[in-house]
Length: 500
Ligand SMILES: Cc1cc2nc3c(=O)[nH]c(=O)nc-3n(C[C@H](O)[C@H](O)[C@H](O)COP(=O)(O)OP(=O)(O)OC[C@H]3O[C@@H](n4cnc5c(N)ncnc54)[C@H](O)[C@@H]3O)c2cc1C
Ligand SMILES: *[C@@H]1O[C@H](CO)[C@@H](O)[C@H](O)[C@H]1NC(C)=O
Image (cartoon, rainbow, N blue to C red):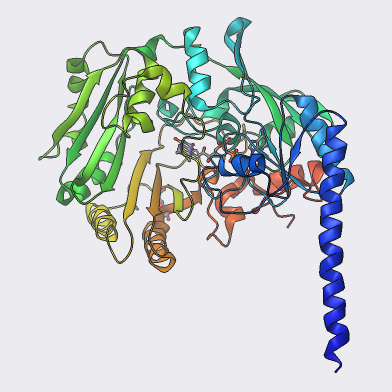
């Protein structure tokens, strides 16, 4: 009998919450509509289309999604959301591997703010929603270049706010080292400049702490370099049998990429027909394949026996390097035939790709008395191989990048792991969750003796102590920045910078 009042109470509560939430949604919509900004609510078709334009779209169901076309749109959307108690997150390229940019609040989609212009003095003006392909294409037109990752579909803002690593770090450092200034809209909807001299703490934090913490960045001013040296490149892909993996990796870990002249990444890529340890990358500032090979022959790891050449070729220009390593180039299997398409038509082509995958990316540090052995690497390669096809898992990628010459600028920004020797990535795709988790934990434990941090741009929801893992020695200072700019966590992030 006395269950009845509880039932009525719960019913009323549910009804009230439905009406209240509908009310808030409609209020938000009306507020933005006054400034001519459409806000899309579920289950409208535009909402569904916008939601699906994320590399991982099954993380959360946003309350609403709105596309911003200008900084003032961003500001208005933030003010409206605030008025009705709705939290906000920004989405630029939508490539967050775990769906950080699809929060349960209002998603401000910045993909239409994607212009890239060269200004006098080699400075690029870059809007946050430009993809890396769009940025590189536009600066290359003016014979300029900048550090970017290999994949053209990644969004510029998310990539650089998390640091940004890629094939140029041996020469140019991590991507955000070239940030000159930016525009940000804060939790109150105020827009302002941030640079080394204006709001320096915020500037420090916005290079390397990851997106989605302090405000919404609406534009960047960026330092560029001449594209000349990068236009004279050779791209390659070599292969060794997996049984040689330990030997290759043990020697490779001492290589320093010669100040950025030869970028060489190692990947254990496993499919049923084609397995092995692959080395791929690029020689820069060379005039021929021969010259590149002459250089490589100085590297002890390269002379590991049983090497075969899968692909090697001189490229037309620096963009071509990305047409080789980006998805159109099949991750270094061939060069994309249409450069323009490979660089500019990548937006959202990989929507929903990451659903159900597990990623992990760790920074490793070692020295002469404490370093990974040949056996350590062979065990890793063998595990990676055995994980493929184990139980239900159809796809595993184990990738290793050198990090030992990312130019060191201590304390210049919040990126905490410059002193790492290597950065490792692995992706476990498909299959049942318990099988994926088994692979994940095995790999994490294997690297543990050398792990100094986790790369925030490959955010990881299985990490329990994520704060020290992502931010290391920068954490204390970042807490102060968080407190100053967003003490109540208006900007929604599943892994926020904790207060203590
Ligand atoms: C295929 C692929 C290849 C990759 N290759 C590399 C690589 O080579 N090197 C590398 O370093 N990383 C790489 N990454 C990781 C990539 O750098 C991160 O996923 C990055 O965060 C993506 O940026 P985005 O703008 O596309 O992401 P989004 O999902 O839009 O945003 C990522 C985070 O930043 C926040 N954010 C987005 N825009 C803004 C803004 N304007 N202001 C404030 N916060 C914002 C979001 O809320 C979210 O928390 C790769 C990822 C993928 C999927
Ligand atoms: C090498 O690394 C180990 C483990 O981190 C450390 O204990 C040792 O002091 C280091 N040695 C040198 C010479 O730096």
